[in-house]
Amino acid sequence: MGRKPHQNGDIASEGYQRLEDLATAYWYSEVLFASLELNVFGLLAERPATAEELSAKTGYDADGLLRLLDALVVLGLLAEYEGEFSNGPLAAKRLVPGSPDYLGDFLLYRRYFAPHWQRLASRVRDGARANERQVDEPQEKYRERTFAYVKALDLQANLKAAEAIDCIRDFFSSPPGLVLDAGGGAGAWCRALGKEWSGVRAVLLDLPETISAARRLYPDPEAWGGIEAVAGSLLVPCIAGGRFDLIVASNVVHAYGRREAAAILENLAASLAPEGTLLVHDYLADAHDSDSVKGALYDLHMLLNTYNGRVYKLEEMVELLEGAGLDNVRFLHLESDTSIFLAKRGSFGEKGRVFSPEMLPLLAKRAGFSFARVIDTREIAVEPWVRLKCRFGCGRYGSSLQCPPYALDEEQMRNVVSGYRCALLVQGEPPSTRFHERLLALERSLLLEGFREALAFGAGPCAVCPSCPENGRCRFPEKARPSLEACGVDVYETARRAGLPLNPVLHRQGYVKYVGLVLFGRKRNADSLHPGSFDA
Image (cartoon, rainbow, N blue to C red; front, side, top):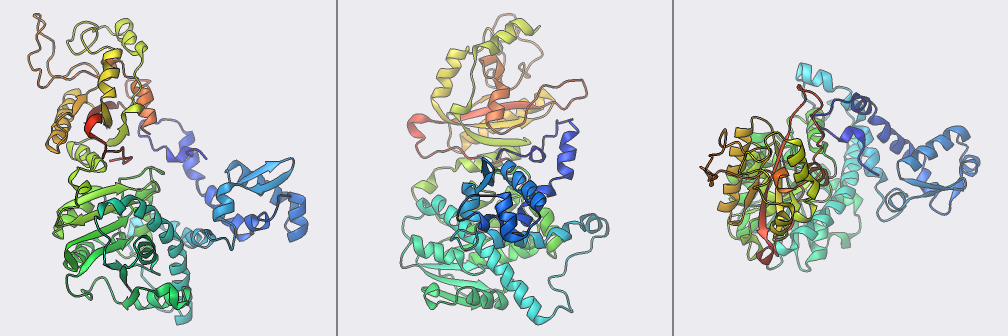
């Protein structure tokens, strides 16, 4: 499935259709919930069937069922051939009850929160906070709700832990001996780490009712091999001593306000061994790839469903970790919708000494850019027609030393780009002088981080001077930078490949975007670099 229209959150968009798409976005989830409730995917697990056959088997309304099946085909969950419907690969793997990778219970648990979202306006207007538990809720109902919660999140945690371990294993020169899974639910991270590194011993720390639900979810004693379950609260320093080689805090920080989150991270940092590592896995309010709005919406989810929880921005999370005394921080954005922070006092070893490219957009944000993404230089589109547009479409052609015909031509630009592994693509806004100053500051920041080959390319005519000297010698060569267009870069295509919406401005009141980039990571010494995909 491609990106849905409501996911393209482009400030420059003026089309009314996006508003309609936003207003009907809940239709997608209701189709999924209804299909799970009706066990559509389970009914199709054995063999393809027509709507009439399924209706006869289940008693469901034939017309309504056919229309639901057609919608699932459009959404890419079912396939249809000559009137027969079958599960697509995703549905067959994740939506068939009884399959090892079934996610239906987790997805249906999301439905539990749907009515809460209808209170968003009153929550913002009145400021009333959510209560953790209704005072008059029966104990048995609370126990069953807790079990459903632990079971649902354990499904997600198993997937996230496996994805994260693929990213972090190289950061450890030797396997961690003792692990603390702080607020770890049913222990998915403990089991994933034990599977990755045999001999790992783990302590699972969570609330008493959560530990009880975890025991019920995993009744087999073998499921608890190497895991010690401890009941306690993260708000209290209940794990004494600095002895853990690795502490995992997965989807924990967003449940608390800044004061509590800082205290929790300080407590966890105090429990680390001298060379221990704290792993924080969480959503970020300004770091997304698969869905450009997920972090911001999850923050509202916390606003509605927790007392004072919030989703933090990347820079805020770094500040929290540094405030806990962990000043060596590495950031990794997962292919799904969450991120990993690895933080410690000591060195990460050979790989850890290389600055992580995924952290570079943070530098761009600090410089004032509204969007930043690390891309592979193969995504930079260089075309000969771009410079022709300068020659036959710009009244300033030949008047600037940073523009054609003086700037690099497309062949020279291709040669320059081919020598680099990565580029940091950024977006900013007028005035051009401020954009240019920020771009130079970003280039210098990369240089100070060890990328001495960092080279910036700007947007539009050079903004350093009103005009170039008649003698053809630039007054400020240390400040002047050519624009991408001047060197033959198709900015629209490059931005599209990077996931940045960019369209021509149609009138004087339109929203103007400037796009620049900084090349970094020479190919001969950039084997440890790889593009990230983080929106700052």
